[in-house]
Amino acid sequence: RKAIARRLTDSFRDVPHFPLTIDCEIDGLLAARAQVNALLEPQGIKVSVNDFIMKAVAMALKAVPEANASYSPEGIAMHHHADGLITPIIRAAETKSLAEIATESKDLAKRARDRKLKPEEFQGGTFSVSNLGMFGIKSFASILNEPQGAIMSVGAGEKRPVVRGDSLVVATVMTVTLTCDHRVVDGAIGARFLQAFKPMIENPVTMLA
Image 1 (cartoon, one colour):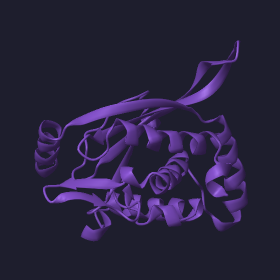
Image 2 (image 1 turned 180 degrees about the vertical axis):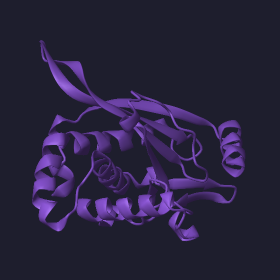
Image 3 (image 1 turned 30 degrees about the vertical axis):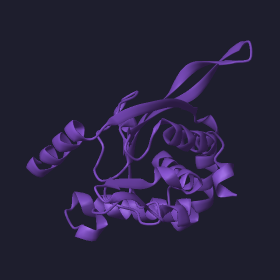
């Protein structure tokens, strides 16, 4: 905890960061999750909402590679794969299916709790996702995990009133906040990343095609 406190204090003080926040409707995702889990049930695999989020983040980083970068005194490092997404790390997440992400994240989470992770399994990620939705947190902004250029904070999905045309309807809405290192991911890049992420979350078929 002492080492974490030191690193996060340095990051919050020294990195010029800013948040970008959007709302995503996830009723389609919840329906897709139910269908995917019905198909995977014979294999004993269960996909979570977080697994969909990780897949969408990885695909969005592939679509907007400028958001998958790190700052260093020597220059900006552009990463070829979306490594990270959670702590511990899922490597090359953009190449993996939802079932593979679900299986690997469950295994890594268990070994993290048991303190059996290898150093390479929690060091060197390129992007982080922090999800506090399961605790009922509506929205929040995370501190950057240097040298990563961005971190996404995910809140709880909840029923909210939504305006469609001239009508008021109820939808399940999830708020996400992207905290960016302005030296690497400026406002335009962050906005483009979220523009790529949001349609995949709201219509998961688009990231499975």
